[in-house]
Amino acid sequence: MARTLFQGEPPEEQIEVCPVTETQNIIAGRWKLIILWHLSKQTRRFGELQKLAPGISKGILTRQLRELEDDQMVHREVYKEVPPKVEYSLTPKGKSFIPVLDIMGEWGKKHLNWPDS
Amino acid sequence: MARTLFQGEPPEEQIEVCPVTETQNIIAGRWKLIILWHLSKQTRRFGELQKLAPGISKGILTRQLRELEDDQMVHREVYKEVPPKVEYSLTPKGKSFIPVLDIMGEWGKKHLNWPDS
DNA sequence: CAGCATCCCTCTAGATACTG
DNA sequence: CAGTATCTAGAGGGATGCTG
Image (tube, rainbow over all chains, first blue to last red; front, top):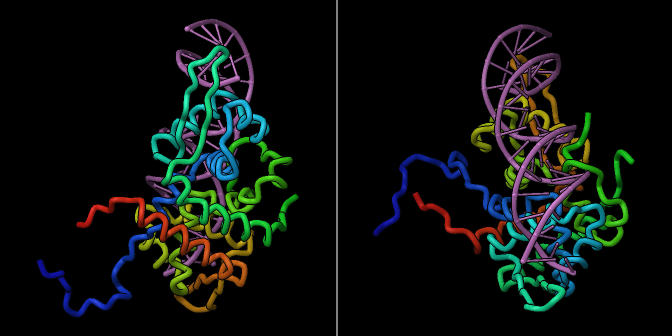
């Protein structure tokens, strides 16, 4: 089927859908980026992640991880042991996000002027 | 006026370890990325930005723009005319963020099923 | 046109206690 | 160790009305 073009409608007038929105939806969350950042370095257990994100409570960490799971960014591997052991790692989709994390980190380092601290 | 931050105290130790945190602080805000995205394409007036961010109210748009100004991401140019005309554009720091926007947009496109209507 | 002031209300981070 | 369940607080988005 041919594309529908609108006569006389200059491209400037067309509202461009913002493709960063999907990315934003996935990383919107107090601890999401920190979690993804650490998991991009290596697989981590639940307790390790809690230490790496100082101040986060178990409940919140669980919820953020579940949401990242739902978004297929993070894989959860449960070892049937006592005491329990659970390892979190990046899925292929999560790994594909590493370049984004890297450039965000790079940019963040360059502009680390805190205006109000 | 306060910048848009997540609830709770920013984990101070984490700032050194996780460099994405600074970036996160700047783009944390319901409309920040959308605004930056459109400004990366071209300079826009206040009213244009409001149309480009469907659903945003004047008050919120003003607040998000002020915070981006405070973070030196956006420049505000006021023309002393009647009726008033205000143009927003990216500062050098804001322009340096374009690669981040691009890769976020690229990644977002790849991992979203856009309703094609 | 481009704001600002004000109130409201949702959303979710955070705290705490309990469990397999 | 790695969760779950429940409650609360408050940050911040949203709506409305007014103004230069």
